[in-house]
Length: 611
Image (cartoon, rainbow, N blue to C red; front, side, top):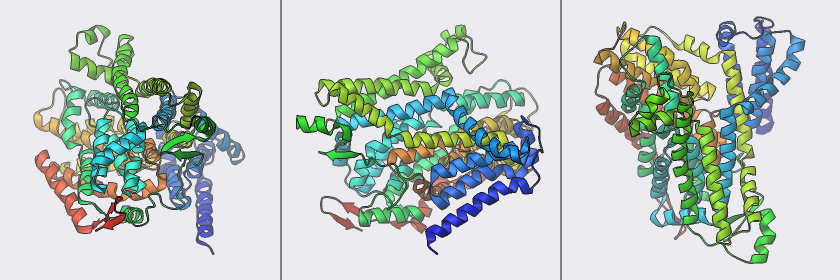
């Protein structure tokens, strides 16, 4: 029997088992319709894990992400329909329930903003490419990039430049650096790994970013539940930064592996394939390609524009300003709009900090006002607005330079949005399965199953693991933070012996360490989950198959996570955090030297490999 047929049969058996388990375990009519997630978690127990596990298994078996996520959503809707009714009604209920989740995710203001942001940034990339800007950036970087090492480090540095949002990072850095990495035969898997490792890990710890609002709200809620006074959520946020071991070590590991040019596991296989054969993409990988686009002088041109190009006979010259100005407009306008959007929300009484009145906001100093405004801003809408403004600027620039007519500019803009349809479908499915997992009480079950009375020194490590598992299973770092921080802060305070008022320095330090375990653990799980929107966007931006990206990245993520656990155990015994960071970095370098294999360098000018 052919391998592909065997895989299809196994996948079919997995689906049948997943849908049959709720029937075999007597869940039909076990709970009233409209029950809470906590109630469902008690009734379902371990079976709350069926939708995410089914989606993950099918994704790895079939390598068809859309089908896998859809069946995951359908299985969750099937379980919910069975809990509140009978078998016959559940058959139709599963189908109609799934469609309600799809519509519900699009009706959500945040999700709609993200979809629009993704579409418009895709359009911006198409415009910049059509204007020769993308090629000019690639050529400028390539002049300084002498090989795979410097090309990867340049990608790493660009990740720091787009510090304010992980989505924008993933969608901008990948496309810009793709031709540079292709030139030096760096695999798309490696590029998507670098992009993903400099997206959420940077945005999550930067003092001005789209993440800080969510983090501060959840920290503040935990402080209130614990009865802690005299401590601000922002001070805890700042103090957790050195303890965000996964964020810091993920960034360091990219740097170290690029400097040493050492890889292991599936990433080594991908890099050797790319270096030896020039196939930066795995053959037959599932990835959205621009098959309806052709190259003329390395400039991407939509097929419908061929007649215009043929008539003009004009070759678009590479111009780096055609990339710098639109991307600069995106960044600068985003930074300004984050402030104006958040300030408007605060002045309207809709800020996230209930204690901050409009009058108090007006009396704040500059940096405090910026921090509060950024925290209250709607990042999804702001980035959509900034990207749309950048597109308008790009179209005007292309028209003024006579690169394209206004009609062709609008068509290029629309074509760029069309190229993002695949990733939008995946995002909708990923959000839908996340909503179903939330309604089934998966996170509640995992918190209860993984929480135990353990020695004080191991609790931060355990919290990191629990946060990582929940984030991986649910595909959301934000959701994990919202679930765990209100639980972990009071737990850490109680373990440290806090009763009420302001904690002493030792108690405060322990609360900070445990809080950091949630914040960085959530990013670890999100970083390697195939149903995470950041993972999806990083793969798409790099032009890599989502499953190929997950297959190669997860081994590095697990390696770093294992070292992070060691780090938390060390600080749990009282070791200085900065010494702990040096120890953990040394361990990662040791791993690369011990099990990593040197990848040869491709010299495009000489068209040869150098060991």
